[in-house]
Image 1 (tube, rainbow, N blue to C red):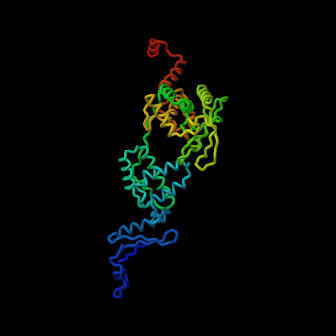
Image 2: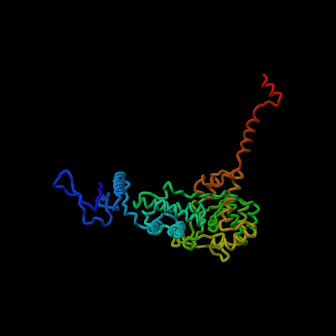
Image 3: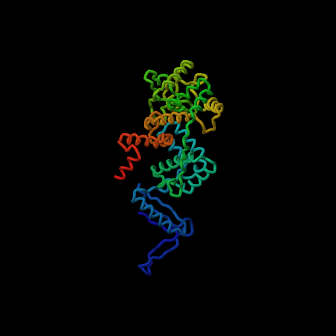
Length: 415
């Protein structure tokens, strides 16, 4: 299936001894690489790779590997991996079947954290050592383990796609010598109830209802800004969460909630009254935005929460101009990754779990894709089973006729 050519020597019949051959120097002797491995690829075309003098063993190993790969059906053309990481990544990200915001975020991660280190390398030339060096440089930039975990996953997915395209045979991220960063999740610590109401009180009045939406309905920030009057059923006491506002390519769009999970959440009486009062004070505005992408089909909704000018609320502007000042006034931490509106969802979940609500119901109302994910985040907030177990067993044994005194017990033992 394959053979090795020695370009520096040729073998010819020996007229004096037919059983032996003469080794003669070729015109290429001493020039260029000595050994050339030649083989027929599965497509019928001849391929070759050359090795320098002194590397006959390496040439034989390479020849054997090509033959084994072709027999196993795992053959990859050594020249296929010549495309650079930046070229392959660009086309791969463009073809991914993901929402446009996710695509934008992935492009940003590659542009800032992967391309500067690996972009000019040929995809087939990226070895585990290069991945280890890349991750070390990320650590030196003091990037969080969680962000490094995301970057590593994106890079690994790109190499997996290259394997599918038969450009490379192995994923360097899967090497035993490469340690995948762990996504360390901080334990959720819900806000004290007092702080929820303090932050609400310190917000601009037209935005206070967003606290009710987060703490009373478990809504994400984009879902709060995308909730329309037609989504609230005041008679049945239900809220249908079917829309969010996102910023894609610097433009506002409407989109389905995260994980495309449309859900109904029970509307408690105090939250119902807060919504009704807000609607009375700040009449909803009819807003038209493209759906899902900046070029998407226009979608119109009568939004409950709008900006001071009656427009779609921009999350970044809201966080900077209203949310963080309210946190500061409430003496709450207000760093980049601290005390976001998402903490209101944690408060919502903690209250329900503390009252014994099932994890399945909480997962459904939060719009999680899997109750196991909800359990992983909030399991430490669930009421301890210790007291509950003792009460159950106490109740069980209280229904039995037990000895009423130590004397009776002693008598039973004596008998």
